[in-house]
Amino acid sequence: MSSEYIISLLKPMLEGAQTTILLFIIAIVLSIPLGFLLTLAVNSKVKVLSYLSHGYIYVMRGTPLLLQLLFICFGLPMIPGVGEYLVLDRFVAATLGFVLNYAAYFAEIFRGGLLSIDKGQYEASKVLGMTKWQSLTRIIIPQMIRIALPAVANESITLVKDTALLYAVAVPELLHFAQTAVNRDFTIMPFFIAAIIYLVMTLVLSLFFKYLERKFKFE
Amino acid sequence: MPIISVSNLKKSYGELDVLKGISLDINKNDVVAIIGPSGSGKSTLLRSLIHLEEIDGGSIQINDEYLVEQGSYAKPQEIRQITSKMGMVFQHFDLFPHLTVSGNLEIAPKLAKKEPMDKIKARSEELLEKVGLTNWKNAYPANLSGGQKQRVAIARALMMEPEILLFDEPTSALDPELTGEVLEVMKNLAKEKMTMVVVTHEMGFALEVATKAIFMDNGEVVESGNAKALFEYPQFDRTKAFLKRSLK
Ligand SMILES: Nc1ncnc2c1ncn2[C@@H]1O[C@H](COP(=O)(O)OP(=O)(O)OP(=O)(O)O)[C@@H](O)[C@H]1O
Ligand SMILES: [Mg+2]
Image (cartoon, rainbow over all chains, first blue to last red; front, side, top):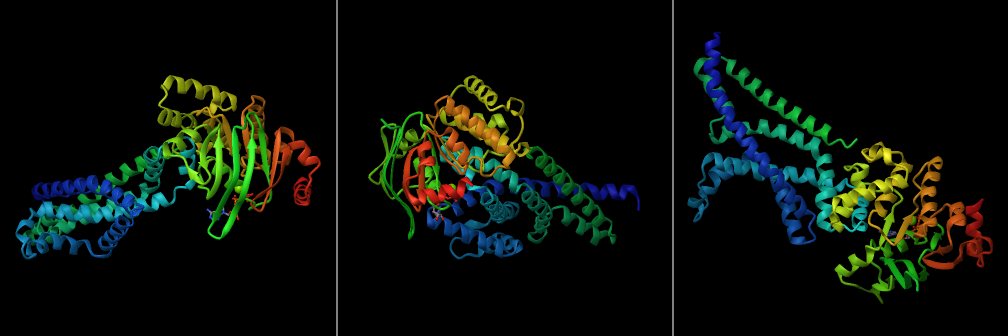
């Protein structure tokens, strides 16, 4: 197996990896804040809001991500009447699916983080004269982030691997190019290369989160 | 003119009447020890004063202003302003774990009072010196002993320049050998004429430092008055029995 062959494989696969990385970044950047808003909604005193967001989280976590992706890409356009307006670019549709799904997982992680913060923290901020908003943003959220960090790291690594689901909605990404090459050239080499590229991505991500965890150790 | 005046304060949790019509006056520069058996309502009373609990009836006046008048609370803005005259120190310190010692001291004046940073810095240096923790200002709470944490908590409360400091069992979570350093800081505050209300099981401290003692049992003030007199010549059997149990 020549090194030229490997290099010729690498080019499309690395391009595919760009799609993977782009999806990952957009999904992370949007689903984390959205997840946090969901957590706030779950904890809201407005009962309707709390029930709705509970329901949302339940549905998103209780059904396969693949089903959700297929629904957004192929299901929405079939809805009578409005369907024709819901035909999205595949990548956009899939990204939307990832964001909506991952927001629910992050919401659960943040909710757990909030629950583990002692009520003494709220009381101490209150008797020191801070407003609810100040205590939320300056006292509670920083601690919640620290507590949630390991779980967020886990979820992010899962997200890297879940990007392979783009394959199922025919958005060309890393795995798609690997599979194409395997079929074309009758060699399993592309699978190994794909595995290595995924490993590099997850490794970089783990190191990044390890760094964050050290930085936010507060000791 | 009392600085804190409570009359007929009532509070219940569901069926349980926790405070059954408490009345008391606390004067400026008083050091008041609130004593009584577990579950008698001491913490609830203290927490009501600073609006950590909502009461169901009665009045609380701080510095002549009504926090609650006959069961109805002042407006949120007024409540904030009235309670800002008080600071509170908790049994479990409740320091902010993600901030250093100076961060803990400086955050509230910065956010709540919006004071200029140099003024805040100067005061935090001064207070850290006062509680003997100048060398620890960059440490995180996780690296402090219990006694050090509680001293930080006291300094943090003082940063807001309260007229009254409330303490809820400030030494109960400490190893016995660490209570001394905290009580020492409190004694110094008493010498400086800080008005303090201290829920405590430390009878020695109460006897030595308190000017006034309040004995509570079962949601009522059974007996109150001059601390020494109350400890030496309790009038009621309930007080006598409690003191006998706690002093031995
Ligand atoms: N949030 C709450 N919900 C229900 N009951 C409560 C609550 N807080 C306190 N109580 C009850 O109110 C009563 C008085 O409690 P409080 O904490 O004021 O007593 P305390 O005198 O401070 O006791 P201790 O010496 O044990 O701290 C107790 O019976 C307690 O169980
Ligand atoms: Mg108590």
